[in-house]
Length: 208
Ligand SMILES: NC(=O)c1ccc[n+]([C@@H]2O[C@H](COP(=O)([O-])OP(=O)(O)OC[C@H]3O[C@@H](n4cnc5c(N)ncnc54)[C@H](OP(=O)(O)O)[C@@H]3O)[C@@H](O)[C@H]2O)c1
Image (cartoon, rainbow, N blue to C red; front, top):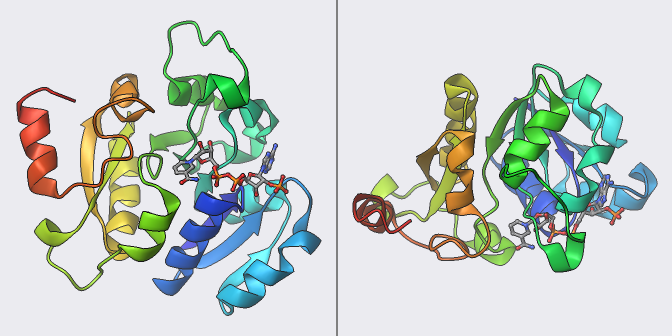
């Protein structure tokens, strides 16, 4: 699969490495330009290329975005129409500034801005070091760590869930985008590595 990556830092860079290792083609972008990404793409090797943010959007059947939430209105909305779009960002008012989201979750705000993208919130709950080192593609699902997904487009969520399984984690569905506050900073599952069994318990207790 062709995967565009917008934001090539701790999360975007880690996701790019994992997707490439799983056999996908990745086109990676940041704010400073492709020439600043030669080290990362050389390290990843076959299957990776450095591009602009617009080219990453055009390239990807799936596009993963991992930039500071406060910059989301710089995303190329027109080029992301119809794409499966993974929002891995988090809203931290101290970093991003106070923003009036009108009662929406941060990912709903991005989805509203993008208009026609098929938005799934995922990859946002796990510390990048854990993402980098704890994937177990050969382990049974129940022994893996969970990555939570939320979204309104079931087919898009299924595509993202498959990618999560391929890189060795266990996807757990949090429901529609309006429920994505349950995987935002401060929520019980946030930065809290857990197995699918524990996630099911927490969902059943409604403690998430
Ligand atoms: N760190 C984690 O463990 C973690 C875990 C889950 C979720 N997250 C979330 O993921 C997002 C990224 O975090 P991070 O830790 O990966 O940050 P990071 O290491 O600082 O990387 C941010 C990346 O975004 C790029 N960027 C910034 N503004 C951009 C723009 N307007 N257009 C295109 N690219 C832009 C930066 O490019 P330049 O360097 O060229 O400016 C950089 O490649 C944040 O929302 C964060 O809350 C982080």
